[in-house]
Amino acid sequence: MTTQLGDIAITMNDGSNASLNEWRGQVLLVVNVASQCGLTPQYEGLESLYRAKKDQGLVVLGVPANDFKQQEPGTDAEICEFARSRFDVTFPLAAKTAVTGAQKHPLYASLTAAAPDAVAEAEWRERIGAAVNPNPEVMWNFEKFLIARDGSVAGRFAPGVKPDDPRLVAAIDRALAQD
Image 1 (tube, rainbow, N blue to C red):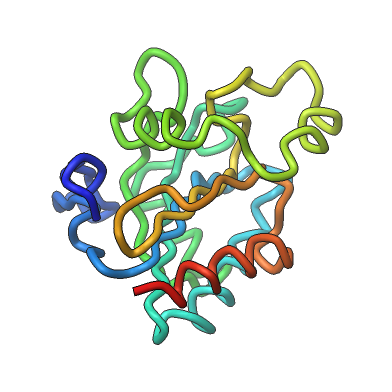
Image 2 (cartoon, rainbow, N blue to C red):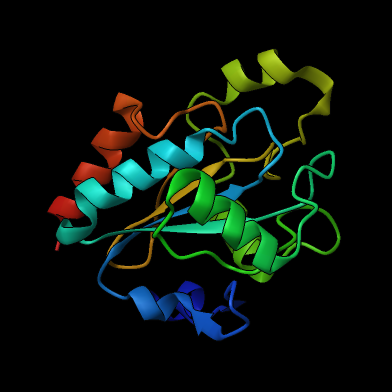
């Protein structure tokens, strides 16, 4: 990871401190997740993607956020229990984090600055309408940021882009192929 993005501190779901440097040299898919969203079933696809590609160097990092219609009201322990019991999630989860607005975490400030536009953004804006945040803010739950092995932001994908979407999978495969 580059010093800038890699050094950003995050709190993990278990309360421990980490930074993106923990995954230096790997491809990281950062996804803001929520347990009471219409897109919550994407947890299953994210876990499948993680299991299929983790040996190649992919890490999925779930970042629970309660920024959109309070669709992630639980505690960190409740969020972890939900993800593990309902979707058998084994990928790392951060603590609940603000991904938009005045309290936005520095990680999301950096990610949205590096990639202000998302693949399939127009489709998502049309589907959700006025509830969606304006660019470059995170639009909704399950937006995805792809971070290459070198720490650069390699892509941003709208919430409606499912984990098995060929556009996302191709981007991940390209990132995994790079040294």
